[in-house]
Image (cartoon, rainbow, N blue to C red; front, side, top):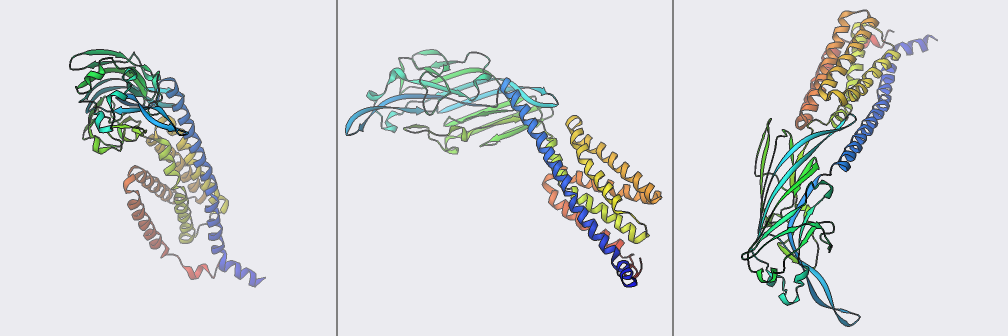
Length: 443
């Protein structure tokens, strides 16, 4: 019995450290559930956004105008010559777009999404239709079916009839765009209008299209650079734009009062030609534009903070062990577990509050509540105001450090590495006071 008692006294603290290590690993279970809860709330937000988009209008992508002319090509079918109808497409030499987005917040329960209304001012110039470059003969062209296409990704967002004004060298025409009566593989859902009868005589002339399109959409507005040279300008009083797509603005000004952005793209900057036949291209791949974003994504920030939960728990439990060893105080494993649960509940408080107050305010309230609870509990347990203040200081530093890491996303690895190094140095400093020989000879 004396041998067993001596063995237990010698290795008691090491068993306790092992059990605390197991407890820290078990704390990963509630943090995993919390991460799943964050993902579920984020999915609910996305569903709410999708519902608003379906009733208002989805993000919009604008393509065109593009001229499409069918032609007849001789082919073979089982050895017999047949005429096959195909389409040739012609893009403008120059495309100018100006738009002013008027933002509005819409809510679905506690979730919000930014929608907008806008009027597009579009001007496009076709220098000529270069049939010879595609090895096409005017005699094979089906001029009566010549069509101008104008594609808007969500037609629900159109607020008024869309009319194109066509100006040729000798004639003009006003065209009303409607869903295409002759949809093609390239433009399956685009608006379209038949081109006037005088087009065959104007293939060598400059053709100019202009239109004012009143449109509404959600979050994003993008343009496809169909011009050999495309110039676009977007303005809005929204202070938090995110420029998206295949190109960033050449010139942009972002202020609290709004933004102004200007793009210039050339045909050399994209992957589809200026005119083509017998094939389809993914034109939207070259689209560029702007999104009106809500700058703080509370779910992304909460997810990042949960990833630091194991670090917070580990450092707190390490501090408790140092208190036991240096000051000869006893803290039961159950009390470790209760403190660990309090540290986990911090994240549910953070998630629930951030949906109403924003991340920063929710983080402050959840941190104050958690630190206050643990400090009170440790103060009552150890009957020491000094220890309570020490734990309070430790938790304030930990939560403050994690908050800083979340805010400084680009420097998180650097700051985290420095913080861990300093933490290890502090632990090594205080561990000097521990009488390891005494711990292995007495209980």
